[in-house]
Amino acid sequence: MAGSFGNGEISDADLAAGLQGAIVKEDSKDSKVWEEYLENIMKKRGKEWIGLYNECRMLNG
Image 1 (spheres, rainbow, N blue to C red):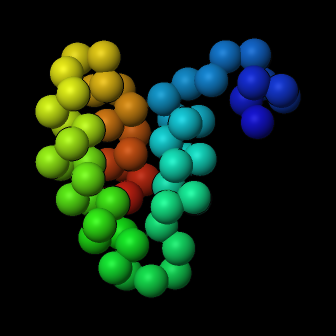
Image 2: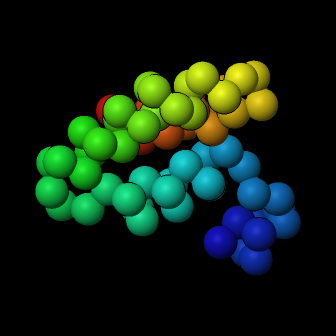
């Protein structure tokens, strides 16, 4: 949405919100699996991914 209605740039927060909405549904298992992915995969991808990782962690709470 930010690409069309915002300033034209998609931020880490925008991408994190989209991922969270697509992956985590009402089942608490979804949240746990997403959290495990964040910690075991995304966190280890390096400094280019740290902004997205942080935004995803904040949303997953």
